[in-house]
Image 1: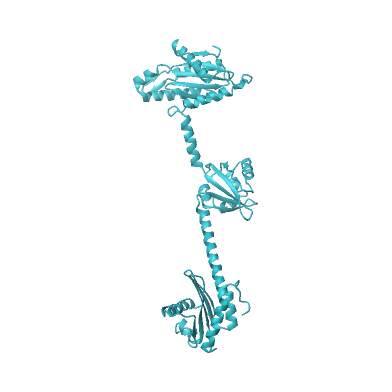
Image 2 (image 1 turned 60 degrees about the vertical axis):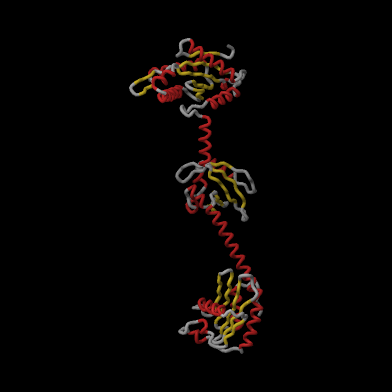
Length: 442
């Protein structure tokens, strides 16, 4: 049978056999891993049911068979009595193609509308066809199984692509988005179609042209483990924190792989804030303000006038009396009010930290001793004109302060703290409510 080869499809194999034998009805059924594949030539009506009914009847006989022949009335085996082919089909042959793979079977059926050969001859011809078809059918089954496996793999990767909690997208060289997974749509709020309606889709996420340029330059055409942190915009205008890397696909396009770290970033910022901030006053805590003091000291150089700074140590006068008379909650409110007044009187950059209790350290960069004294005078004036109010009572807060100017890095932090603390003590010892200036030389 010329032209019968393993690379042909099942339909092509059946067409060739059908034409060579001039059959009235032909079909090949493959049973592969519980799935039936039926190819029919002639009259497809009722064939599915008829073929399965015929094979089921033979299976119930429980007798081994290779070829079954009908030299008359084969149509009645397949069709209901009222169907024309039930009367027209005369002889037929059904052959089982063996051996095939473990759980696969194949059957070839040919039927004719007139008597052709004696049953013995027809049986022999069928066996020859079955032998000829063995390699082709086996190859077809292998190809179908491979196709199913590939389809399953593709479906698995498609499911992974769509459902993975990772941002995955790809843009072609014309800025058209060609891949946009479900996580991208969920996180950013735009669909693939909506993105591709934009002349420059990247502008949806990065309105700043310079940022867009940097994002495009970050795309690598070779494998890299480097991650870039970007802050794209959501559809609702919220700014996200994301980490991105990219890989090259087999077709040369670049796939961007990202992770939304907005919540993690927010948690990190909150932890950093809590680690450096006094829980009550929202000033720097003791550790943080001392770190800022150390940094200011390391950056201080005598030849650079803009690096000098002033340390102001402040302590509320008679604060214990407020706590004793009105309670610690009122005392806490008084501390909050006092810090608010300090912030209102400070101009420019300010570092305010709570050393403990009612004692604070203020760092004023680029400030002179005269300016520091003027600041404390303004603060006292505000506290007098705007006393702290608690219910119907008012309290005029008072404070003492020590000031020291740091113009060069020639003194240890501990020494500076001792000097300014001594100045504060002198202010309290000599009557409170005043500011005492000291110096490194003193």
